[in-house]
Amino acid sequence: MTDYLFAPEPVRSVQVLGEAAHYPVRRIFCVGRNYAEHAREMGNEVDREAPFYFTKSAQALVLSGSQIPYPPGTADFHHEMELVVAIGAPAFRVAMAEASRAVFGYGCGLDMTRRDLQAAAKEKRRPWDTGKDFENAAVLGPISRADAFGAVGPQPIALAVSGVVRQEARLADMVWSVEELIAHLSTLYHLGPGDLIFTGTPAGVGAVQPGDVIEGSIDGLAAVSLRISAPA
Image (tube, rainbow, N blue to C red; front, top):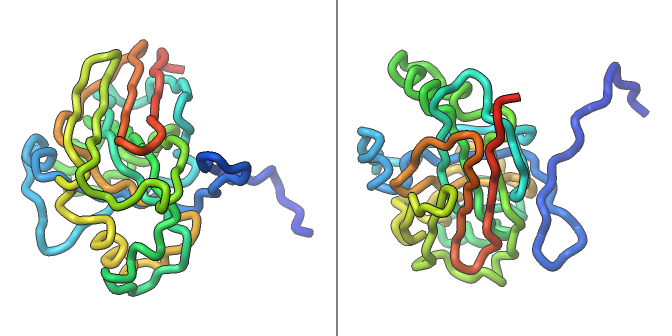
């Protein structure tokens, strides 16, 4: 038995609807600019040659219903509502036609972003890590098994802040489908159980403040919610 100098971080996990066992999270991949209108609102165009990605650590995960403090180092903290794909089987260099077999289930997620830090990194052509990967930056609701949710397509995706709707679209508006994302990402990584893919956000992202309540929904999935408190 290994003796550690200090206690390792506990495994982060997410509830699976209707089941006692939780889904343990290994890695978090995020897709950039997967809705054309969001890309435009950020002053960008969609790269139609291939999807691109950034990552968040598993320790950035926080569950739906949590209250988190407004994070340090930012004055422009943004919400991004997303469909999250939970991988349930090994996938490496899979064909698009086979990609759906790797999906365990789906959930509602929030890609929380320190937008000012991300913008500063972009301007200097530096990595986005400080804007995207920080404590409580990945929020996830309960996962529904893929067969219970059905095919990804016309389902509405929406987000409201303190009761005011800010984001509205349909999953069919994604530039790259779930199958395309898995097939492409599996050429870069050995995907497997415990990997999450945040599939991108629609237009309408914006800042939140202490006291705000964020509520996101996708038809057929458990909603995701988050409350923002004063800085710690």
